[in-house]
Length: 153
Length: 211
Figure 1: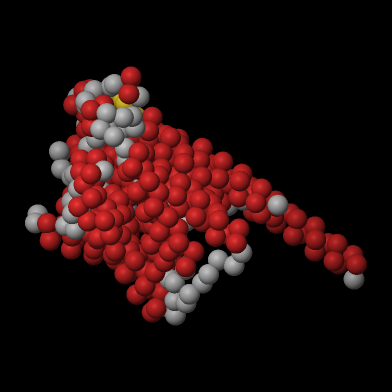
Figure 2: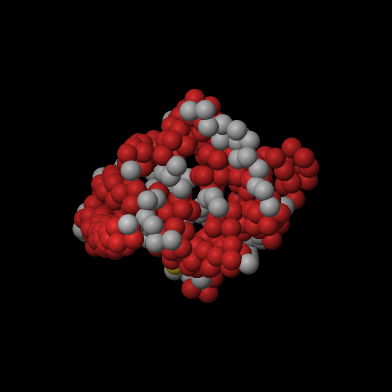
């Protein structure tokens, strides 16, 4: 409760300086930079990377993601909670793989991630926030149903 | 602000968020999943509190034309995209924030989820074309474009410009509605607690009788 209150206050400052907290955009840029590293200029032949997200390491949203990783590592090491954990069963790996793909695809289709939905668009009363929330609630419901079936099965 | 300045601010913000989320174990996925699956609201309540603070703060500054609001056309692609995202986050057991934070804790499953989020994004980029629905620049005209299932751009500030009512007033209505949801959750929790106490008391009586 305290943590989220602090995050909300910080997010307001961030909104005034550069823009509200978001993750999906930074992740897309990381995807673009990694792809560019592997295939080079070939990438610009895909219209998306030429028109929507031109790979640019100076894109501030990337550094929110890297910051979260850094903050979490520091916090986990300091509280002695850092250790490698692996999903045990094959089923978990499959679910995580499908889940990851759906998240990445969904973010780009919607142009927003869950963070922009709850911590950016909706508090700005952007119509997209309400559209996104109705989508994520329906999706979480279907996901929970699948999850339950898998747990039982 | 310079590009480097923006990146530094973003990194500092991200680091503090990473620290706070790691310590508090807050998870956006759990906020929705646990409420639906287990009827527990440990993560749902802080999410609502944060949204109330943000709504007030953002709409207050939007009233004065301050702040950098997100500005792009929205449409049915938000519903469809976040629907897929919603299924994905429950299956992966993590959302965009918790994948980064759990990866930082050494959770290999979260790193795997992150890797496939990137792959999912890349797959989408292969499908995207300039004149194709979903959101293509050509269908984003700033006005409702129903043929492309786009509704244009509306936020608290455009409401202010249209109706002459300060954005923060609209914001306070939203804060009030979020508050009602919060109150309903607290009431539900109280009812659950009462039921739990009753069951515990009944169990105690049984144990006493057995003894």
